[in-house]
Image (cartoon, rainbow, N blue to C red; front, side):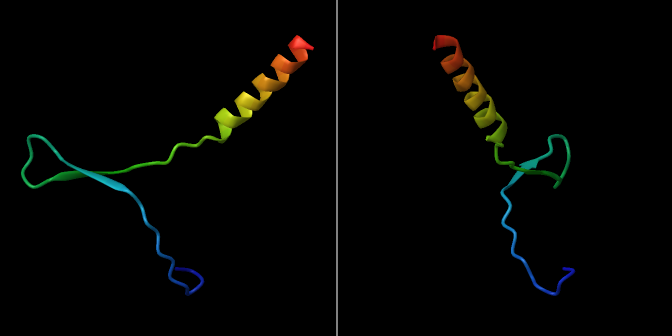
Length: 54
């Protein structure tokens, strides 16, 4: 909180019990997929296909 404003962050957490331990849990954050790389590759593929067939 550097600027004095409180920012509410909502994160999706995945909580799983650790096998073989008593009252211990592993907390993992679910991440969203980054589609920007796939969209970029699809656009390049479309441009190459158009250039190839024309």
